Image (cartoon, rainbow, N blue to C red; front, side, top):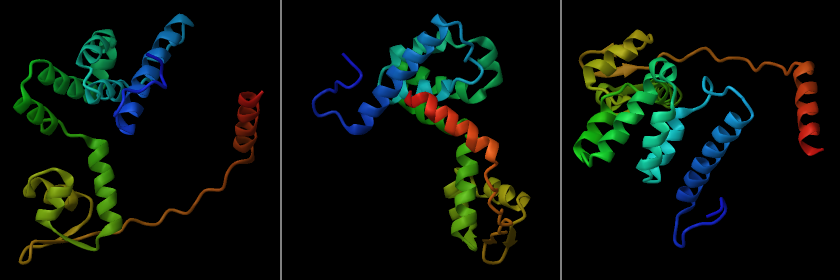
Length: 187
């Protein structure tokens, strides 16, 4: 089957994920053939998740075997994603949920925290825990460490707004490099 070929009735999301899996596999094979070292920068967690999402656990399993040990040691999120894959492989569906909850997905939590910063001036401890994927005590401690204030009587948190960053001007040399890159791609 080619990249653009779809299964009849397949959703756009599944087609996109299947394409991403195909692209990832082709890039890794092409990089290896050309002698390119991409292992340190390759998004293995996303590659694994693409296979898991498209219910291709065999490909996820083989990808796991190909991931260098140094990457597995340096990136705990890759190991956490594979735990989810292992639970799916053994059909331990309760374990899938435990594996998802058993890892602190820091980037996701950070993004949710930033969303709370921009959306709320005050929020209940219960709601903050819900959005951050933590129990109330952990969520309260987390946001207090970020400078928020807690009203113990109402169990409401006051959000500490972050300083607004001013936009940086684009460096002309970067614009020149981008122009040359786009020109190279077009010709």
